[in-house]
Length: 575
Image (cartoon, rainbow, N blue to C red; front, side, top):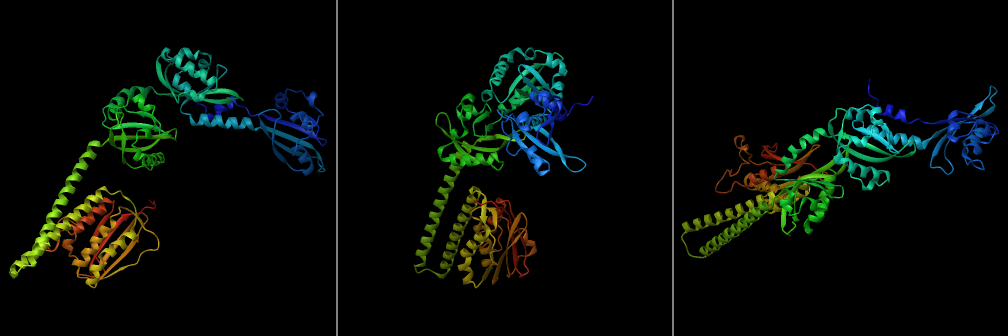
């Protein structure tokens, strides 16, 4: 036997009432169907020859916009929605004029549907349809009124066996009191005091206890209050839970779940070690309560992004129970139930030691950079003093080489500083046209001394790409390479766009780059003239562009020289 569909199961318990009556041209009732008499508890003899408003609406005067009266006047079908006096129900009423063979109106047939019941049927159908894979039962006045096929499959009982059984005896003794209290709250309509779900063991027909999850909802059934129970078989989940719980407890990361108001609903046991709070204490807190005051604004923004599925991994500070400030990194996404977002779930990693190590590294690097720069300044100073002395011409040559080495050392320090800065910079939308213009402004004075023209025609439309604020430094290094080494007198810059990328093309009419060197020109330390370069400029460009998720290629230009194509990811989001 095929199981009933949700619609078939509904139809057995809900019957749509259709009231039909016939009125003469004086709007007096002549005839009414059996449903009409049942609805109002009146016999035909009680209402025959009475006017419409007295038999149905119980009004002293005719209804405004009465469909029967209107149909008699217009000789057309009239439809209205009317409410019953002193009753919380409404009806769709349709009045259809009836004509004889000569075309004269003999009377009106009135058909009425209870729209309140229609809405109730729709709501219950949607509930059962939504949970058609789960068990459904409806309790009313301590009686089991409705059971769907899915619940029969879960429990093994027939519909009649369940309806006749004392279902409380089928609940494991450990859970009876809990479910009894839940039922009492539900009967008092205190659904705001109920848990989101109840887990309990239930005795099936094979005399074995199975684990089920219970969700209770208040509904109207046949116009009266009732309790709808959604039942899910979670036996398999319970079997695997100890294994998964052990895995969670041994993770270094903290797993958490927040509701839509950032209230902590679940957190893995290792959170106690990081925060100093017990799990119970954490569940009584809002996630934002733990965040360092200076990071609260950013965390609220990140939480909102996580709810919409747009959040990226971020670092922030929180304060432990003993007041210690710790750094954590979190990655979050929406938590869903039945296709609806109910909060945020994520993973949190303690990175306090990593942050401290980076801070120490940054301090040492800053100290070394400062000391080396001081030594270079001393070299520059003494070289300048030597120039003022009467020294041999051969010595002057050595002094110039010393000054040149000091300048290159300064350049190396600056490029390393730029690379380190790129690693820390946040990737965000950058206006590519603006970055190009900044790089041109930086190199323009040098280009003018060499009589090199730089041509750039910015696009009218803003070109936003994924990069960092030092993108202009990368473009500057390509322009600097062309100005200093290409022997060109013209440099052109233009953009090429596709659906997902924007490519900045920088080309010149210089001597170009030989094919056997194109693959090496972007590598660290590569230079055509070790006496005049550090080999870090174009390597810096490649590193920066790849950091942004882009790529760079070296080709021949139709102008006769080299062409650099810098492809970047487009973005429409603004900061």
